[in-house]
Amino acid sequence: MLKVLSIILLSGIMFSDDHIIPKSFEECEGRIANYYVAKLTKRGSVEGWYKATEMHKAYYQSRGAKVNIYPSLQYRVDEENNTENKVFRVSNLVVWDNQEAWQEFRDFRDGRSRMQAQEDQKEYDAFVAMYDRHNEVTAQRRICLLD
Image 1: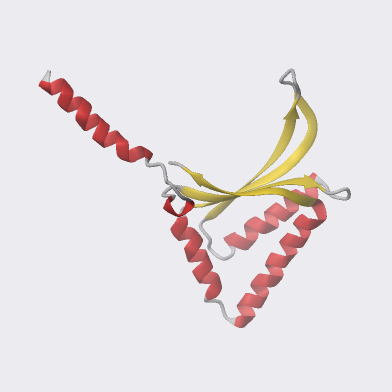
Image 2: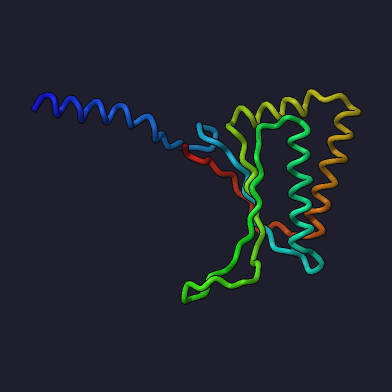
């Protein structure tokens, strides 16, 4: 009986650390993300929004950021659980490896020369303008992805 209790106790200790749930965003030890939900503008298109997403990805990749961007299309479901075929919303999940990766990118950005910062801003403004032409953000959230 003592062996069984010891195994249960040790199992509880070993597995308890695997599922630490943070009490605040700053305590997130998993990956962190920015989540954007948007509706297409009257003149916007899924193709234009997706091009903005590709520009957004290129912006971070060319600067060595430890981040991935996951674009997605959202479809409504009716009362009978049938999926409607028309795109309802577009969304992007911008996932950083962790809090440190997010801070590293901020530090990198802050350490840029004036000319580099101007070029960064120009490229940033270009993908934001492309997004703005094609979609209007309806919700923005910060997410802690638990490991």
